[in-house]
Length: 275
Image 1: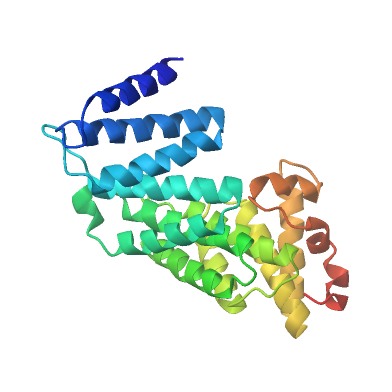
Image 2: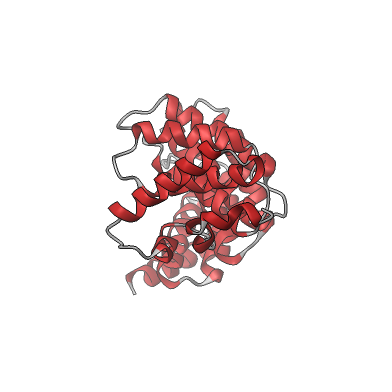
């Protein structure tokens, strides 16, 4: 109720003052923030749509007197809103815009605007993962995701944790696997996940499972016994150490787009499948 009253208050103030008023931009920005917060509670698309409109408007309006608006931060808030709408309501155009905007943001001196380079990069990986789901061909997206994740792994620190980006990469791989489509560049994906294992906590089931399935896919193409043996070892390790028990379907809750895990756990027959 308090949030509803706040939105009503902002709307009333905006109806009383002209766009040229020194406080107009501040009210528009606060309205955008409030409507996004209400969307997170209500899950009503109308709130999300309005927050996107008002974030966009606040970027292009002149600054308010006595109110500092960090335009780069607002731009990033707009991107996050677009990503949410693309994911929740399956709108490919939103994720395309978000990806373009995030690439632009990564070229800015983000520290100057108190925006985290790691957060922007991770958001780009997550946006590309959404696009892999929504688009027919995500080869270029996965290649870019691998490069971005490798960059995060290279500069890994306690303040620069790449876990979310790696999880998004794995989600994209599993989505392609579930769709029975090629995962490329497969060697790059496997190397990236191997590197991720070196810095992840022991028993990182997400990374272990993603690497196992990637090796299984490569085995189906090349029939390398080494890939088969390693994939089986990784899967057995996941099952043995998982607090979720022996049910592979429980891993579905870990990813945005759950694949057919039974195929991964039935690796013995994967050589007969056309992935």
